[in-house]
Amino acid sequence: MQRKAKTPGWKDKILFTPGPLTTSETVKQAMLRDLGSRDSELIGLVKDIKDKLVGLGQAGPDEYTAVPMQGSGTFGLEAVVSSTIPPDGKLLVIVNGAYGKRIVQIASVLKIATAILECPENTTPDLGQIEAALEADPEISDVSVVHCETTTGIINPIEEIGRIVKKSGPKYFVDAMSSFGAVPIDLAECNIDYLVSSANKCIEGVPGFSFILCKLSSLKETAGYARSLSFDLLAQYRGLEKNGQFRFTPPTHVLLALRQALAELDAEGGVKGRAERYSNNYKILVAGMRQMGFKEYLRPEDQGYIITSFLYPEDDNFHFEDFYERLNKRDCVIYPGKVSDANCFRIGNIGRIFESDVRSLLTAIRETITEMDVKLK
Ligand SMILES: *Cc1c(COP(=O)(O)O)cnc(C)c1O
Image 1 (tube, rainbow, N blue to C red):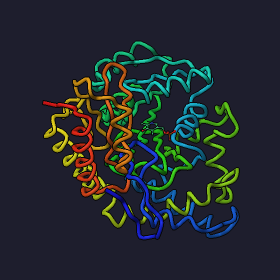
Image 2 (image 1 turned 180 degrees about the vertical axis):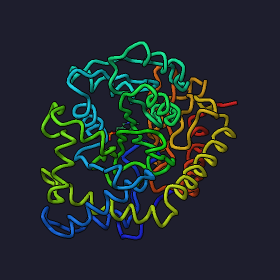
Image 3 (image 1 turned 90 degrees about the vertical axis):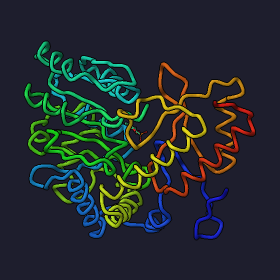
Image 4 (image 1 turned 30 degrees about the vertical axis):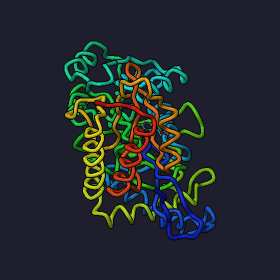
């Protein structure tokens, strides 16, 4: 099985991963330009991108703004943690996977006080426990949760958590890295103050910057909070407001690619259209994997359509590295597991991949387990 693009000599493997992801040829082609940082085209493009991103969060520019931050997704998370939590603040981190733990790690390096509410990786957080944690500790100034915990693919209830946070008053920060653009999110309805995502997840741009959707009234309260120059969210926002420019070298090619990616998202029918394609990818994948005898780690009711963790088959002939390499030779890139209490591998449905790609992957997996003599049933 080979994936041939229209450009001669251009053949990439299909990425069934949580990022970097497969992007369209047109998105990659959009980068074949050099723009100066003060170019009026670039300034207009940055403004358009910001407005479109706010629109994807079902909000308007009076209430929310999008602040792009150079670097990968984690840099955006670090910008929120380092520059929106007050000097004497305390962050309640809701954890049910590796990405929740990463937020704890960011806060810990920054010496920001945390309270951690950890629940098993195969369950969504208990809303009663969140309520109790907030009641018990009036020092909590901020609450964070991961929307789609990419560790497993579980979808956490950000709207219900938002309602609880609103009742008790802290700011609310959502890592929607792997869901924004493909799972509908109403920023205001969820009471979100800060939401982080990246150019190269469900928006299907190329990696290079993250963006933070900020409730303007909250962002403006953060003067003096920043613990770092580069990650200063308010300064980055003010810089862009002042002259439309980034404070430091803008990721020009990545911005050009994102403009094209946003146009392709629109053409697909926006978040709803993308959700349909990814859900269909997910359905085809899971049906095919179950038919072969693979089992998912999560209960189907907790599982989102972004990425799925599958348990290793209980057969001594199965070795993940070998399985991975054999699929890789067939141009299918899957991902190792990240769950701490079970042996899993992961298959993503996001990026520029379609039903035919998922079917090719299923064929490759079927051939591979036969080659490896792995018995599943
Ligand atoms: C991908 C991802 C990140 C980290 O993004 P990087 O681009 O690797 O820094 C953080 N949180 C979630 C939920 C993710 O899926």
